[in-house]
Every structure is written in structure tokens, then in C-alpha cells.
Image (cartoon, rainbow over all chains, first blue to last red; front, side):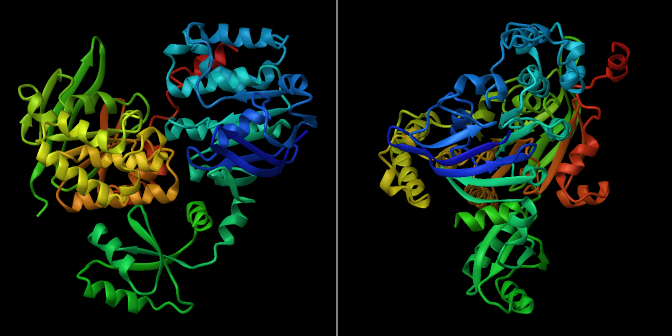
Length: 300
Length: 258
């Protein structure tokens, strides 16, 4: 009941949206597609939900072929597109009833599946969908995507533009859905959400950079990263970029992530170099790589 | 060096009927500072920012931006600030050069100045080979960098950035922050509104709005210490109303109606 893609490619006129993409999502897995805008995430979703025919390659969802068996797939999957696509002029309850009816079911029949999500927007059930806040729209869209009890759930950037509180709640909901046996493919441009998935594919410019568990991807980072701080961030970045042993310099919030070309890095060397450059309040310590470090190294 | 206040806000308030969107907020932003303005959806960020950029009159309180009063001198404010949003960037159907010329004209720069700025900007961004290409054909990251540079064309004292790096790949995003650091280093004040908490980590100081009020204002480092957490995301989660807006006073009611 999982998802399988093998050698999928798709172009729009001259633009290659995805190139030779292959990966499998196991039944019951929470799998993340992590990459920036324009990486090809939405194209993959549209192919898997049978809305787009690939130029090359094959794909199956819950064991069915995305081209041949599109009718079966459409009944078996739930899809929450990136753009809010419910009826703005219908109320919360009307939207949900509409989607239930389309799929030949009723709200009551599958209420247990959506209950803990829907209960949060139920006080607003008579409000038009267009008048809901971002977080509420997202919950309604998820309820509508679940109302026919899909085997596989596709969520295309469900948390984009949503504040941290709603994002956190949303991921907690996904974990609960996963426990009910639903296979979930979710995409996000937020690298910090990668850690919440069982496995992830890092994707950029239509190609997959890496597929693994978030832990494994981070632990395979080939270098030691140092957090470097000083009084003047702009000058610090400039100085580090000109340091003769520099491998990479990336600003990371209040620090800069620095990696060195040498095997034996001397903290004192760097310290005295930065002092000579006129920087003060210098701080250097080793730190752990995160998903963004891994992504940037793979994208180099 | 960074003593001069470029934004001064005192007891600023905006009400819509019975609803107080912005509730007596006060803060200052210094010259060359990178100031993060955070809050959940609906916390009042946009309303507050609209007052600061001179397109919405406050209900009460005081504010000066770039030395001009928000009540009596909104037009002077608009001439002295830059604005860049993730959504409204540049004209896709104009080339890189045309966009720069167009916005230079809008900001009232002379032809000579526009030409000079255009050449400088194109060479700084390394866009020589694509300066006659339509902006719509550029990757998102380049558009964002160009858009930021365009917002600086008229040498504004302050630039307002609305979620500047959302959805951009991690490398481009850091190049973008380097540009921000550079502008700040040259004395431009940067005012970032965002709910991407990792963008907040880059700011010198951040304020967090909750239900119309500023509930916290300090450096990211001090805020993390104060709330005993490791990231701005966790600071935000501790501060923002929980249960969230979608779980209103309603949590109990919800249980009742089931």
C-alpha cells in the first residue's frame, strides 16, 4: 500500500521539472520530500495523484499504476494541494459534506478518522471557508482530504505560510494519522521539519540529492562544523571567506558555520587570524551538522 | 556608532471597531540594526507595519520613521524607506534592466543616477549575462536577490522585508543574508517581519507580538536564555497563545458538543 516511482521524468516545454526520479515509500511510512521552491516537488505530487502523465518512467500508488489505473488511485488517495483549493463560498461543514458526497460516503461514516482535527474547527462550522485563518483552512483541507478514508495521503507543502504553533499541531496530527496505518507523503521547504519524517528525499532542481533517514543523512556529513561568532557579522563572513584554509562558510543565525580544508584544524590559528582582521568577541566551538548543512554540502 | 534611532514607536495603537489589532506597542530600532518583527498569523504584525510605512493611520500613540511623523508626514516616510515582500517582487514581463530602470523612476532618481545604479547593481550581483532576460525566467533565488537590491536603489534609511527568504534554497538564502548584513553594515536599518523562526535567528534583536501586544523584545540569544530553550522556534512556541487560535476558548466547548 506504499508508493513507488521508477525513473520518472517530466518536462514542461524546455523546462525539465523532474529528471529520472526513483524512490519507494513503504506502507505506513511518513516520507518527506524536502527542497526549495522549484525543486519539482509539486510535479511529483501531480504525477502520483494521476493529474499529470509522466514523460518517462513508471509509478505505482497502493499497488496501482498511475497511468493505467488512475480511476482506482483517485478513490484510494487523499490529496491536499499546496494552494488552498476548497470552495471559499461554502461553509466549513458544507465543504466537508461536499467532499464526502463526491466520494460516496458521509461525514458520520468516517468521523473517527477526522474527529481530532475537525473538532478544532467545528466551532466555526457555519463560517465560509474563505473567511478562515491560515491554520484553520489547513485543518479543514486536511479533514476534506481524509473524509473518504484514503490509504495514501499526499500533502504538498501543508505548513507553508503557517505560524510555528499551527505547524507543530499539524505535525502532531500527521503522526496520529500515521498510527492509523495511513501512508503519508509530505513535502516542505522547511528543513527543520525533515527531522519529523521517518525517511526523507532531499530534492533540488528536479533531481534527488539523497534518500535516507534524517539521522543518517546528518551523521554522514563529512566534515566537522564550527560555530564561529564575533562582534561584526558582515566582517566575520568576509574574513572567513578569505581565510586560506576555508572549505565553506555559511551564516546560521547568530553564528557562522565554518568548515576547514585541513584534517587537523587548529582553533587557535583561526582565532589569531580573526583577531588580526580586527574582529572582537570571537567565539569558536565545534557543533553538530543539521539537515541544512547536509543539503548544502550535497548541493555543492 | 549605532546610537541613532531610526524608528521610534510609543504606545502605538490601531483599532477596527471593537477589535484592537495593535495594542499600545512601544519600541525603538537603531541605525544599521537588523530588527525582527515576529508574531503568529493574526497577531497584528501587518497592521503595525502598515502604520510604520505610512499607509495606515494609527488610532492613537506616536511613531516616527526615518525622522518623520506617521500622522503628518507619511509621504516623506515612503520616500525614505524600501520595501520588499516575498509575494510582490518585480515585474516578470520586464527584463532585469527594465525593472531597475522602472523602479528607479518610481523612486524619483535622475536618469544619470539610474544608469549609474543599474550598472553597479548588475555587476555586484553578477547579472551581466542575463541583464536583458525577462525577470519571470529567473530562478526564485535570483529574483529575491534582485528584488532586495531594487528596494535599496534610492538609498533608503530603512528597508522593510516581509518574509524575504521563504521557500528559497538554503545556499541562496545565505547569500541573501550576506547581502542583508552588508546593507546593515553600511548603515541601512533592516526591519524583517516573518514567521519563519530561523529567519529570526539572524536578527540583532527581535520582538514577538501576541494578540496585538509586544510580549518579548531582546536579542535572540537573550530570549533563548530567558526561556531556557535552544531555538527561536521554541521561544515562539512558549510565548504564542497555546492553545492556538484554532483551539479558542473553545477547548471546553468542543468537548461538550461531542
